[in-house]
Image (cartoon, rainbow, N blue to C red; front, side, top):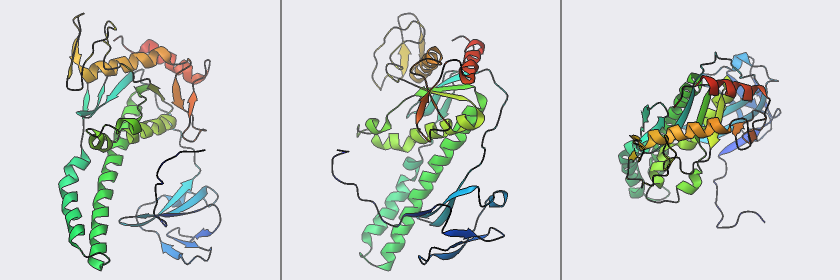
Length: 312
């Protein structure tokens, strides 16, 4: 039973988690003391934080996490994050890619920053420095730490980029449609694996779903099959390879490949919202997907978006 294959070994000591016991905040909330007698003791909290707003009862979990640039204390706080926004009356479809980070159903394209590709030269430099150091030496540990900090910076750049874009997209639209991509399967193509991982599509989707909950907007993941091949005007299947960047159909439709796909994604989302196969994130499901129920206020909101959205 369970998944088979070679075991994936994980380093020990990357994080320690406490629930509502084993720790105590100072009155000024600028330090935390761990009282479980494991030798951690008192730690000073540095940086920016909003802990003064929260009571001890609201903090449900505390986690110490080790990163390449130091140790961090994460607080899981129970708060109401809902924030109501005025309806915009607009719906949008997004087609993520490697040439551009995404192209929307209006025709706008967001450039792909390629953080890993940009920092790859620096990473190779630090990797060579690690290789030249004697194993077990203090200088090798310093070089490994420098390499880890560079990797950490790139991952943070990618995460922050996805977060800011997702927030902007969700706040500007009442419905956001995107492809239900399985990135784990896509990276099996070794010619594109590095570029796909560098793009950070999963982080972008994760933040869109989180902000969709926060701002009360609808996010719909549609079946990605034939979104790039079907014509957005007549529905005819026009087969094309990845190198073909322009969609040309017999009906006279000539569009950028990604723009055509984004229109198809939005149409597919609007045709399925409120029925079986439509998926949104349930705030009570902790990451699981829940189907939209007909007759709910959310479906009524989507129906109004469908009526108000411009014809494509």
